[in-house]
Length: 141
Image (cartoon, rainbow, N blue to C red; front, side, top):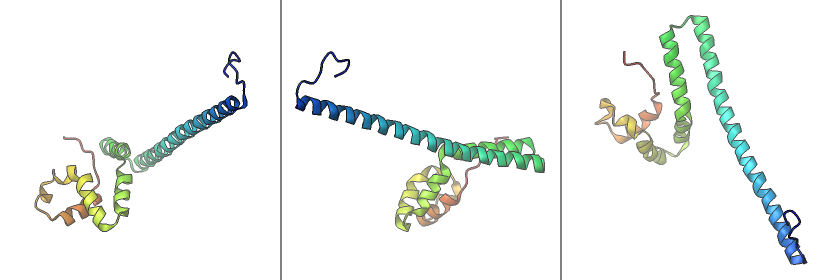
């Protein structure tokens, strides 16, 4: 097998060695493919964030945005990217109505429990409204 110190002596042992080698190559190829796909997906998502930041930089330059507003928008873009907010909202919106309401109760629970306005509202209203809310990062000052 390995370095020639032990070798297959009959056809059954040779078949077992061939199968082991083929399975090893297949496992290595699968692992490499999976890793490559992860890197490619991360790169695509990261390029979307970079494209949005480039657009923001152009807007800042063309319209002379104040630095504080620029920083707030940039932080908001990064927050949305880090938390996959667009993907989650899009996924929830694609579900059938009943499933959308039930899943929204759990996905947006941290939002509607902290907003006083939503405390006594019907669940249907809350689950309709929460996906429409957009997070915004604002300095306390």
